[in-house]
Amino acid sequence: AQSVTQPDIHITVSEGASLELRCNYSYGATPYLFWYVQSPGQGLQLLLKYFSGDTLVQGIKGFEAEFKRSQSSFNLRKPSVHWSDAAEYFCAVGAKSYNTDKLIFGTGTRLQVFP
Amino acid sequence: ETGVTQTPRHLVMGMTNKKSLKCEQHLGHNAMYWYKQSAKKPLELMFVYNFKEQTENNSVPSRFSPECPNSSHLFLHLHTLQPEDSALYLCASSQVRIGHNEQFFGPGTRLTVL
Image 1 (cartoon, helix red, strand yellow):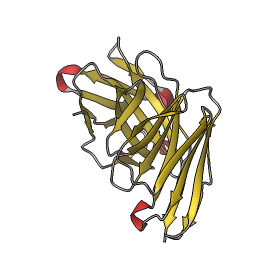
Image 2 (cartoon, each protein chain N blue to C red; image 1 turned 120 degrees about the vertical axis):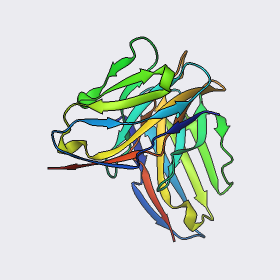
Image 3 (cartoon, chains in turn cyan, orange; image 1 turned 180 degrees about the vertical axis):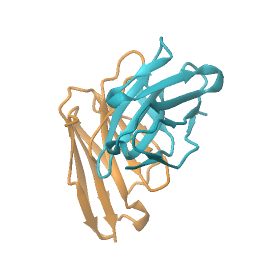
Image 4 (cartoon, rainbow over the protein chains, first blue to last red; image 1 turned 45 degrees about the vertical axis):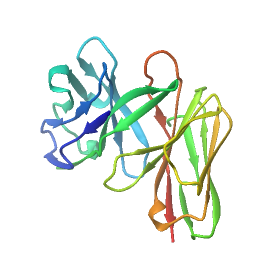
């Protein structure tokens, strides 16, 4: 069965520090992978996505993620975190079902940024 | 502005009330989704509509009743809810075509059932 694991429930970093959020997936075929961010009281915003091709993908707000098939991972990174990056981050894998697009989400990682 | 709007943003209702959540997408998409987001749980897909036809119902209790009158509007009718139904309800839309396509989310409706 398809699943997504985000092993870190809560991460705290200092502003300016680097960041890596972990994501592992279980999926039988070539996965479609996504990272979404949710600020308090808001819906989910797409940060980046991987469909095929270059395994290092660039997203908005200076984020990037690397797809590693051998490790079934799609970790999110940012070289220097800003206070405005404090939010909840969700990794998701996409699956096709009856001609619709299903997203299977992890439980999320809450990022706290200290000044 | 994500192109997907939801009303109301907050809703408090008693267990005997009947209310409806509304979602509208301005992106010209052909598929719409309802998700439930509870604390400490992954987002749960509830319903999917593709070209106004329901294509997914993930064993959602009948006290939740979706309606999709056209490809731009999606409703979730609520009746006889339980306190454990309190959650953030998110609507999303996508353009379904070959491959997998990203979903665009609305801001959600925060529902509290007393």
